[in-house]
Image (cartoon, rainbow, N blue to C red; front, side):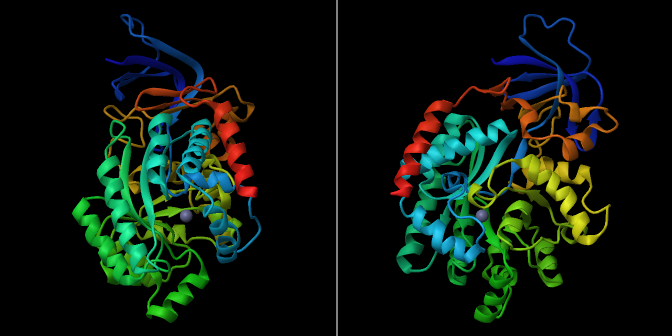
Length: 430
Ligand SMILES: [Zn+2]
C-alpha cells in the first residue's frame, strides 16, 4: 500500500474549485482519497509531505504533439508548414531510429515533467521505443503510431504497426499508457484509407487522433481534390463516427463547425505552433460557443519550440482577445480548464482525470507561491494563467508517484539524456 499526505498552502482543484486556504490531500495507491482544509493533526504514521508555501493544481494535459521532435528543435525555423516539412523535418526524420526516438521522447518527458505536464498525446513512429520512455519516466501518455497512406505498402504497414502497438501497449504501465490510431491527415491518407482506419478503430476499440484543417492551403487543396473541406471529407469517410481528437482546426467554415459539434469531435488548439508556422488562429470562441470540446497543445517542439503548457494557457487566454478585440474572449478559467479538465476529456480520459477531486487520479503539480508574481492574491487562478510560468513548478506527481521533487527529476537521469541527445544531434548534422 502506497499512502501519503500532501499538505499545501493553496489549491486550485479545478477552475470551479479554488481554495485560498491550506489544503491537504490524502493519496493512496495513486488515487486522491480525501481532500480537506488545514493540516492533518494526527497522520497516524502516514508519511506527510509538507509544502505550506505551494499551490496545488491538476497536472497539465498536452493534447497535441510529437514528443521525439524535441530532437529537431531549432533545426529549421521561420519557414511555412509545407516547406518546413519537406526541407527540414522529413530529411532529418529519415535519419532517426528507435533508439533516437526513445531519447527524444525522454527529453520531451523531462521537459514536460519540469513544466508541470503530467499527460501528453503523441503521434510519431518507432512508438514501442516512445512507449518505453513514457513507462520509465512515469508520465501518462495517449500514444499513436503515425499513419500515412501514399502507397498500398504504406497503408498495409500502418495497419499492421498500429494493431501491434495497440495490442502491446494499450492499458500498459498501470493504465498510464493509452493507445489511439494516428492517421496523419487527410492530405497524407486518402479517403478509403481513413475508412479502413475508422473500421480498425472500432475493431481495436481505440479512438483516433488526426491533424485537420491546419492551413488555408490544405483546405483549398482538399476542396480542389475531393470537392470537400478536410473536415467534410473526414466525415464522409466515416472517421468522425469514431471518437476523434482533431489537432489545429484553424480554417473552418460554419458547416465545418457544425460537423465537429455533431460528431463530438474534440479539438486540440495549438496557438503557439499555429502562430510560428504562420498558419493562422483557430476560431476557438466559435467552437466553444457551438459546444465543441477544446484542449490545448504545444505540437512538436520543432514548431513551438518548447513543450511549456503555461505558455499555451496564457496565449489561449490572450490571443483571441487581441484578434477579436474583445477582452472577454477565452477567460482565465476557460484557459485553465482547457489545459486540465477539458484537455483530459479531449485525450479520451475519463472523469477521474484533469481535476483534483476525491476519487481522481493523483496527478498533482505544485507551484511555489514564493515567486513575487503570485503576490498579492486577488485571484489565484488568474495569477496562474496570466502571471505564473513553468519555472514555478517544484513538484510533480503522476498516479501518486513523485516524478519531480523540489525541481529535481526523480525518474530521469538528466545528464544521460543530455549526453545521448548531444550524440544524436551530431548524427543528424552529419
Ligand atoms: Zn502535429
